[in-house]
Image (tube, chains in turn orange, blue):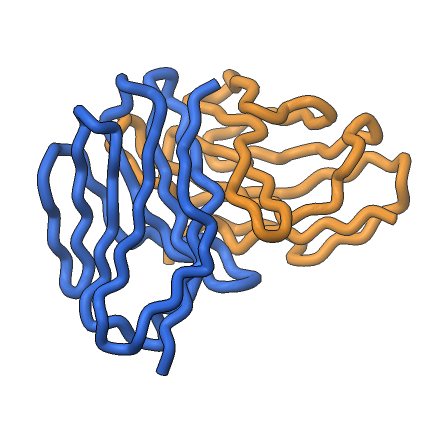
Length: 113
Length: 110
């Protein structure tokens, strides 16, 4: 079955450590996205990529980094510079074109203490 | 900054009644509009997409779009307890970003 796989489901880290969240899709989608969701809040866009080897900052990119070396993979690194990293992180993908809806992975819940 | 606005709720609707969810957006260049449902602790799932002014129906769900008023809504007929969730409005902006509102919590009263 085609889909988006995020791993791990739960992740715990100590403050000051960088951590990388995995996102893999086998839907052959060109575009991939990372969102952050805090309790009771909507989704805020961190980074997005429309094509391999290219990506753009979203609304809250500070303290995060991404790479897009392969079409199917779009890992997100939460760096120690991110001041409030504890959140629910969602990866999504879509076909190219403005009318394409997002397909979401199951999310990674990151807790930093 | 481009925005999508939703009433956070909670919106309480009796079982069997019509639930009406509303959303406004700021980017006049937006062409694609989506409604997602999100259960607590889960990822969002697509309910409806709409691209043209007017109504679009799919089962118990109807999406309505008015680009002149920059307004999109979702109607849920014959509301069921399983419809209790947070409903997220999403809009595709001219720079190919998809941005979300904060969501409306819907509670269907048995």
